[in-house]
Length: 384
Image (cartoon, rainbow, N blue to C red; front, side, top):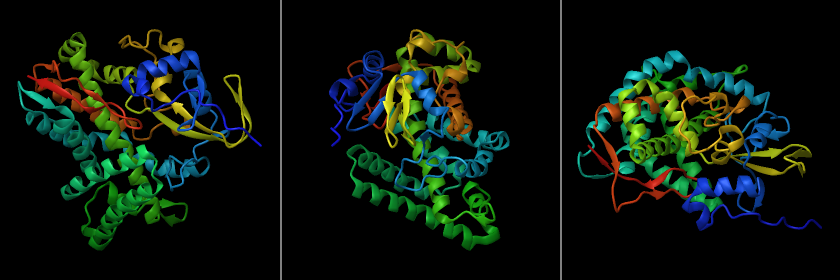
């Protein structure tokens, strides 16, 4: 009879939630391959994470009980679906979408109160992520309120691990999207020429994509994009407020923003972890794993590994971008990275161009988000 593994750490302990970067740094040094009931086997070192990412045959992405296109698939299935999805984030689409993104960002920045305390999440980050994502997908404005509520319910169900609640929120999202697909089909030639309509006409092999596949694609884009982009914008604004020298440099040299954004988000991760499962017995980091071992890749630690980055808190713009795992690596590298980079660059360009200063509010510290969310659950700032 197999004994239950001993827990090496508690990912939800107060010490971890109070300062996740420090906690992950400690685990990377003390116990770089660690077991917990909540996350199974967690990998903290950059080399170990890269080992997994570069061996998709041994470390499968098929970990979800829900259909997940293409994130939860392995080759050759993953390859076929990925070839459909990647063109949606190609250079031409990004060029066409850029002015739309900029107009939405500028409007939100102009609406921020000046000189007073602003709850930046409520007044900017959430609306920024939602408005831009809905514009990219072609979703109507009346869907934004229900989607914000759905995101909160999905986050809560994920946090508690409540399977019934997770099933309910999955069905709720499916209902929203299938309703949009019905509308598009009923409109025929009059349907809007947007991403959602285009997916209806995509083919996998000799057949059209099924509704469940389209819903899965849009769910992955929505869940991944909305929460992560909102977290990114909050992290970036907080970092600039906390580091006035960096803020001033980027105000004077906005051309540095793309590299600066990737570096700030390396220092403080907007996405904490990702999952895999071993397909056969394997050794990693000197530890033997059986087939069927569930694994959690701790991006937030790997991107701070001293053996790769030196001082993990040092802000540098000359790092090798291939080492930064912000968007993953290997065959499962985030296909939406071009859109995310566009949104973040334009959001920060408009925020810096249309304000004169961003600062923290004395006596009103930000509140860290609780895993699996990243960034801040509350972010008071003063905007000038």
